[in-house]
Amino acid sequence: MPNRSLLYIGGLLLLVHPAFADTFTVREDDGNLASVEARWVGEGQGSVAIERTDGRIEVIPQHQILKREAGPDPEPISCTEMARRLTERFGADKFRVYTDAPFVIGLVLSAPLPKQYEAKAAACLKKGAAFMSTVERVFLNFVNDLKIETEKPRYPLVLLIFETDDDFVRFTAEESGGRGLSAKSILGYYSGLTNRLVIRMSECHTFETPLHEAIHQQVYNRGLMQRLSAAPVWFNEGIATGFEGNGDKINGGPLRVSARYARAALKATTVDWDEVVSDDKAFRGDVLAGEAYAHAWSIHWFLVTRYRQQYVEYLKLLGQKPTLGVDDSATRLADFANTFGKPVGDLQAEFRVALEQTAKKQRVFLDEKPRVGHSLTQLNLAEVEMTALTNSTSSIPVVEGRMRNMSQIRPMSFLITIETNAGSYAEWYLPNVPPQKISPLPRQSTDKEMKGSPGGPAQTFRIKVRAAIPESEAGRLWQRGKFPVPEWTEN
Image (cartoon, rainbow, N blue to C red; front, side):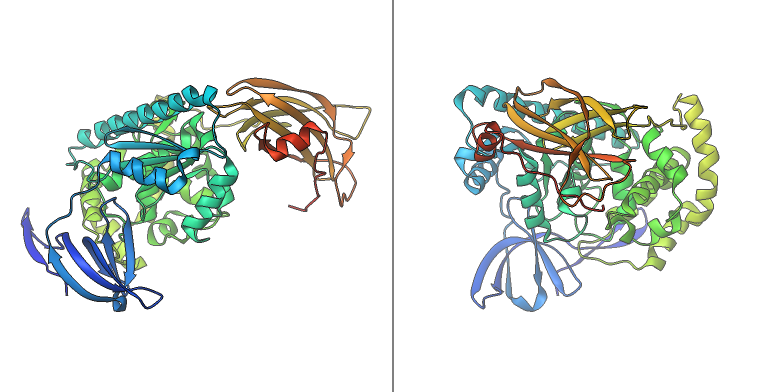
């Protein structure tokens, strides 16, 4: 059994698991023995969680730990050492790094970078560091206003930026082991195991996803909650969705109504607050996640604006949840009701009135009029804005638009297709678009036929983007006019 101590805070007796730096003798999966120096941070579910000097948590089955010897606390690695390890991991020819303690910003390239683009890569890294510092400042302003105590980060806070979507998807699938949301649908994430924030380079245009994930990183490195604890997903996502920005500026906080999430919450019909608070499963699938995130924002906004004192008490309760601990649905609902004095379902009934009143005061419009025949897509380093034009003389849609190269560092080649549900398509080839520049997509009819086209009237369309470095194998094939023909699929 690990060492434990008792602590009295405000008249409450708490069971505390102090973090020790121990030496563990571990039987690895191949049967070999290994000696591991790390901090013990928790146990549960038949496993032990240990924390390495770079902030990674390793979860080891309890039966594989043969011996544990207490030792002095190891010194966390420096930002410089973290940069060195990351460079070794990804290779010096395809990795650039910038440190600004406590942040380490890494850029994972898809191919070696010509010398003339090094300055742009350096600017991208510094921009990322400045953004992370802004997130830190805004987050601390929020928690300090609530008079919540925080800690300084113990480890370097890493942000990894992947130049191409393909490399991001491969890395994400490898790290996640195929669990959770599909790697292709994720724009970025914070890993509670590695303590790293990982994003696509295209997200450095609006910084919407990096902002959300960086808030997670702040929550877990400022002592508000323990990584891999039983703290509910809805709270973790609720506080992160409360911060919104515009580019590298953050212009919203958890006290302000989010038009995006508020609209989604008002339309949600599949899951409700009780389900989101009692269980995390709605956040794990691509289908229900949209409603779950909308409810997470709603609950968090409502509590921090209408039940502020109880909100602080609840956050302290969540902060005491130990690593690898587990709470059942009854415990989660009881924690909520005991803290806020009402079941969560009763509070949902109060939410709509409060939302409408506050939205009116903040001049946030909850009614949304969608633009029919218009789309805005961010995919594979391209932001594509497309409009379908009415053509009374033909059943074949006519489309036009524009695209932006979202690469921060170098020119790219793009092959953009618009594909209809009838199996027809149009395509644009842009051989060399400078970084951050906009190129027109001239008017075309979607009259080319996809492989396996079912035919019939076209009613909907979707955008697909392929990107390549001009000098790459794919880039050279496109230059010779060798373009792949899209294959029709039902979804």
